[in-house]
Image 1 (cartoon, rainbow, N blue to C red):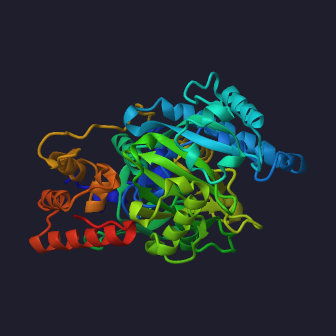
Image 2 (image 1 turned 30 degrees about the vertical axis):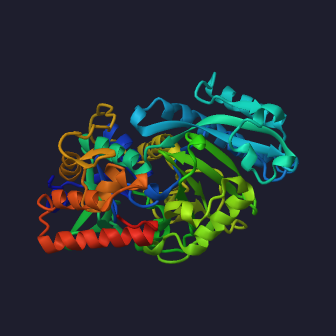
Image 3 (image 1 turned 90 degrees about the horizontal axis):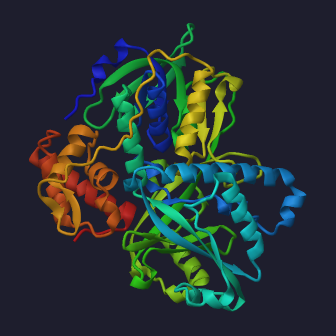
Amino acid sequence: MMDNGFSDLAKSPFDVLIIGAGINGCSTARELSRLGYSVLLADRGDLGGATTARSGRVLHCGLQLLAPKRSLVDYLADPLDLVMRLRSARRAARDFEEFCRQPPRQLEPMTTFVPIFHDSPYSGWQVDLGAKVIRMFVGNGANFQYRRWGLNESRSNPFVPDLGKRETLRSLISFRDFRFCWPERIAIDAALAAERNGTRLLSFTNVSDLSRAPAGRWHARLVQVRDGDREMEVSARIVLNLAGARVDDVIASANPTSVIAKKVVAVKGVYLLVKLPARYHGLGLAGTNSVGEPICCLPWIDLHYIGPTETPFTGALADVRPEEEDIDFLLAEMRRFAPGLAITRSNVVMAWAGVRPITTQKGYPKGKRLPFNTIHDLALEGLPNMLALSWGIVANHRSTARALAKAVSSKIPRSRPVQAQWSGHIALPGTGRRLQDDYSATDDDVRFCVEHEHAKDLSGVLFSRIGLGWTGHMTAEAVRVAATTMAPLLSWSRSRTQDELDKFKTKLKVDHCYELV
């Protein structure tokens, strides 16, 4: 297994300490290391293993950001909201096009349908106008593939007979979205590209006791928590607080001399993975639920996922999981939106839950949804050379990384030459014995994940790196083979291996409502 050189970290001060190895932390580490900054990237869990792993899986074109809550009259009352939505949609559309140029392994296309009813806050021609705006932002918009279906031709769509208000249907719009395959794999690829440019990666490492020395450097205590509590103090010229829902905890650990306003509201989102008939394969449906929030039923491999919930969360972040009341809510909303799908508890294959670190603003109990990716310069609040990020999303991670790198470069110069641009993706070997017959991952892939990709537990291999856990048909035998393959590489005894298996099975049951067979 690769030695992370933990004991040597104090010898060389870093330019940048990034706290949080979600998609934005990993992508920013890649960007900064490429630009010639020495970077330490640390996370209390696995790379991409928290909010990133539990997010939605869809890359939107940005069209939905132009939709008003009630009607277009909203924009006459608040033209600044329209300006913000246009800016957000432009960024989303451009990031969408950029993402579409990435390696095929990261994205799978899908067609999403949105019904327009008589009581919808917009009409078909208004959506047509929005589509023209999106195309204007990105040129011809070849990846967008927008279309509006007339009432008669929309009747042939497999979803239309299932709609709860189909008698009030006016038209149907469709466009091409993409699904991430899968979010944490994208984060890990970015982190590995950063590592090849010199970034030091530390997973399962707590960062605490932040303090700023008179000379201006930040100091922090690192504690490795996975295998032995090794400690080390490191220093950096600037700190990027990209800890997601823990952003405010990181700020508090710096012992600010004045009260700093909260930056994020933790909002819990739950998704369900369900089995639908073959006629819906590759097709998605989106709309709004009974409280005016988004709801979707989108394809995922040979299944579909539905969600999300939107619930302010104040509990321990380690306890975020799908509860029965969350599942009941989503099933009830789908019965209202598309009763013909007849989705019941028996259709649910598995579930997941995460928390979104949405930007705090007075008057918004669930956080302010736009703009995304807000950068906070904490020098304005008494913490010089510390930047924080709220409401960072997967779809915008590349432009967010560039924005953070620009902010860093405005404060400190780079210490190294500019590096080559790495793609990040190195294919898994694909040799050896398959973990299970209906999935391509092998025991050699498992070894590669441990030896070269910083995997330290079964979840990190089976979910984050090879994706088998997200298929909804992972078997007990596949998990056993993975564990016995990992054991000698991680110095697990027989009893430790069994403990890891038992913990993983419990995690599947509690966090994913999934029983191994």
